Length: 101
Image 1: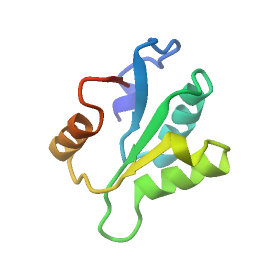
Image 2 (image 1 turned 180 degrees about the vertical axis):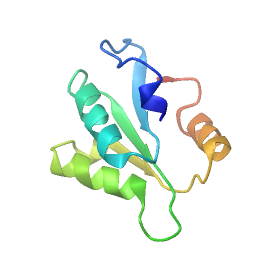
Image 3 (image 1 turned 30 degrees about the vertical axis):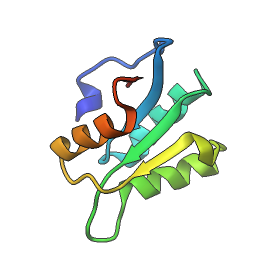
Image 4 (image 1 turned 45 degrees about the vertical axis):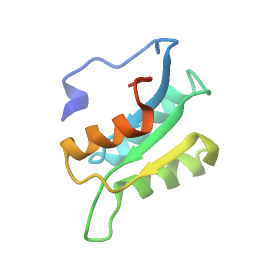
């Protein structure tokens, strides 16, 4: 998994405005989102994940974030991207040149 390849981010650069949660390991990645958000509560969290069989990682992540007290205004749900290329295009349209992790 991707998160096993890199060390955890301990300090969020001040120019970062968004945190992207890729689909997949919803539980582990959601915990990491919460950890990062509590380091900077100005962050906007983008949840993603597409699952045509009805289990949607983006929606599942949003639900957990809301239940954990993250305001809806800080959560952006993008459940349409089906692969990494679509994910990259979606992020470019959404955040432009703004920094994200």
